[in-house]
Image (cartoon, rainbow, N blue to C red; front, side):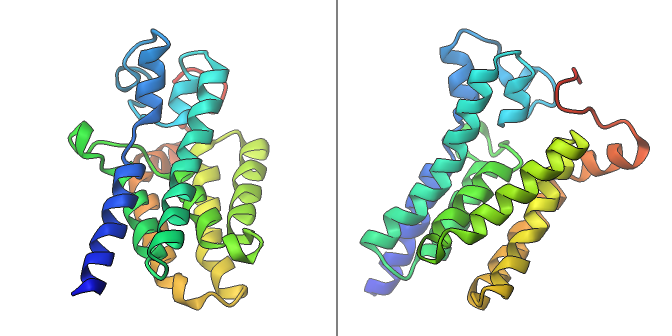
Length: 201
């Protein structure tokens, strides 16, 4: 019975932290518009950037990363062995927050966050490789969506290479879900209509 209680606690902790809509909260606190009413309607840092407030966008990005990392590290300390459950729950919490009628973000920053947590004892290599792929693709292409997709694809590959095969199924699932969430972006990329970072949608 105790193991099931631990599983439930890990899921609840992960989901509760992951579902905090920092982009929406910060823009409201700053007196800005409802972030869901502009640009892509997304609550993530890229759409916050469309308000013109770079500091707010950067803060959103950092907090969306941290909530994934903190969720994993909390359960690693108090309920060791349940880290993958907390990671999955944090990722899903960001994508489908109950507070916003399950209409959340696309998960890139929070995906990075859970990777930093899951690879914490391995030099955080999964998170760093994700970040390098993400930033590198963004700098080269200026497409936020493409950068997120490329970074997500790197996650299960990194896990397999460094010998954390137990994480591969989870990360494949997260990557596929992230790609699904980006499907409209993929269609716009293929048609040449996807907006680049720094330009209005």
